[in-house]
Length: 119
Image (cartoon, rainbow, N blue to C red; front, side, top):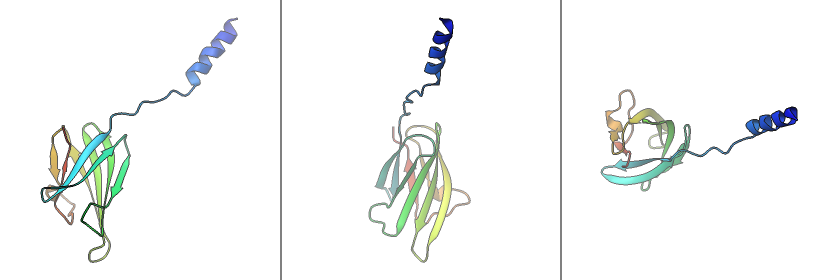
C-alpha cells in the first residue's frame, strides 16, 4: 500500500506545474520629447523589435537582461549612409527613472533617444 502511494506522490512532484509570468516591464522610448514607442517586455531575454514611427530605415531592438532593477540591451540599426548597428546596455533602477542614450559611454547612437520606465 505504501509503494503505490509513494509512486503517486513522486508522479505529482514530477508533473509540470504552470508557471505564472512575472509582470511585464514597460519602457517608453522618446526622441526630441516625442513618444516614439511604448513597449512591454515579459521575462528575461524577451525581445521587442520595431521601427519607430516617422523613422524609416531605423530599427530598434530591446532585450530584457534583468527585470529588477530593469536592465535592457538596446540595438539601433539604421540604413542611413550604409547599414550601421549600435548596441548598448541601459539600467532603469526605479519606476519613473529615465536614461538618455547620448550619455552612454562607449556607444554612439545615431539619435538621442531617452528611455523611460513609467510609474
